[in-house]
Length: 352
Image (tube, rainbow, N blue to C red; front, side):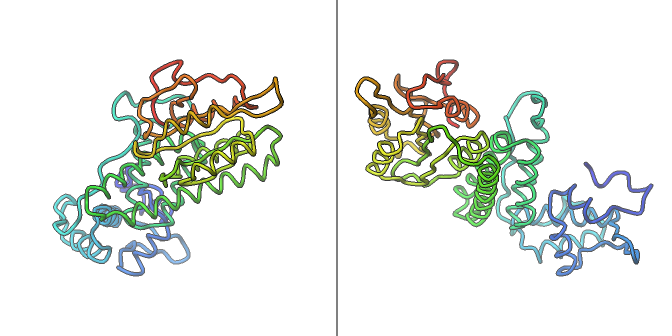
C-alpha cells in the first residue's frame, strides 16, 4: 500500500493505518512524536489523529534513515528539515550512516507467483524488508508484530522459509561484512524469532496433549551453536502432534549416543551450519545403533540437516530438502526402522 496516494479526498490517515503501511509499530510512531516532534499536524479533538501526505513523507524519511543506521535523533532532525524545505527524500545526507542492509526476500528470480496460500514474491520481499528495517531500528514491538503476523498468515513452514530465514541471512551477511556493526541487530532479531517459535511449540503441545508415537530427537552437532533452524523444526513437528526432544546446541558425542540408546527415537535430526561441525562418521555411527529384542532389532532414521553437510549423501542417511521436507520425513517415521522416502531419491538435496 502506498500511503502517499489518495490524500486529496481525505484529511489524512490514522496512526494505526500508517504504522501498518510502513511496517512499524504504532508505539514507535507515538515515541517519535513524543521524543522528536515527528507527529501529525492534524489533531482533531475527540477523534483519531490524522497524518497528512506531508507528515507521511517525513516519517517515511525517518524510517529510511534509521534503517541505514543514522541515529534516531539525527534522522528526525534531517527528516524535519526536509519536510520544512520541501526537499526530496533521496537528497537526504547519509554520509555518517553505515552501509544499508541488502534487499532480502524469497527466491531471487522467477515470476511474482506462488502456490495458493503462499505469499507472492513481492509480498515475501516486502515482509523481509520491513522486518529487517524494524530490526535495524531496534524496534522490538514492530519486530514482534511482523514475525507473529507472518506465522499467523502463512503458517510456520512458509513463514520460516520465505521470510524469517532469508531476513536473518541478510542481517548475518551485513554483520560479517561490517566489523560487527549489526551484531546487536542480529541478536535482537534472533531472540524474537526464537521467542515466537517457542510460543508456537508451547501452544501446540498445550492443544494436542501428550503424543503416543515414539519421539523424534533434534540436536546440533558438537561445536555447533546455531539452534534456530532446529527450533523451527521443533515447533512444526509439535504442530503435527509429534513428540519432540530438542537437545539444543553443541551436544557432546557421548550424550548423543546415550540419548539415542535411552529413548529409541524414530528419527534423529543432526544440524550442522558449517563444514567444520559436519561429522559424517558420527552420523553413520548413530545410524548403525540397534536395540530391541533378538530377531526384532531396530534403528533410528538419521537426517543430515543444515548447509554444513554440503551435498554429501550416504545410503544409510537421509538428506532433507528444506524444512518442509524434514517435517514430512520425521512425521512419516512413526516408529524406529519405518521406511520413509528421502528427498535425495527425488532430486538433488539442498540444506533445510
